[in-house]
Image 1: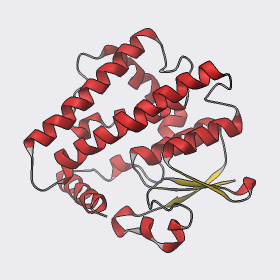
Image 2: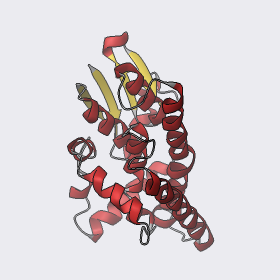
Image 3: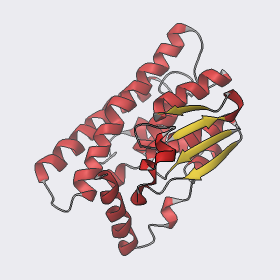
Image 4: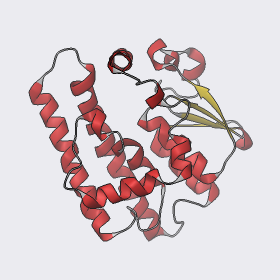
Length: 227
């Protein structure tokens, strides 16, 4: 059994989607980021960085793993699924996973901060991160013109990217003119495990019912990025 400490963010969804794809039993512990629960003493004992997600593998001596990419690799290697064991295939998955961890995630995250969360709209910063997000999308589109999935077969690299790229509207970034990326987005959305995973710990779309709800959600997120 795995304990999953998470919140409804792209990094959190990466792990819940992977757990759903792997069919592993897990217990969800929702972390309220706006209340600073990720900074509590109990949580810092399993994740010294005070961020989500974190897992605790009860079947492996209560082994705690933090950092979403590291969790994906741990789950894939523990089960022998979603990442090849042979060096070349494993390297290909790791390359695209690192592309998400070092590029897509941080850049879209900064686009969100400047476009959605900061009360002062600094247009050069907004444009810088939106434009770079679009450039990275174009890299993905080119790769997906050559391959059905990012690393050949379906893998944790696809999961990691999808959980971020699917939120492109929130970042104010267009996917127009990127047919291969759109094809892949649609294919990911059709996977039952993906649909289940993005509803953990709750369905964000049900919170964003109207403009006021969206503004309230953005305000809570703004408080979170300042912690």
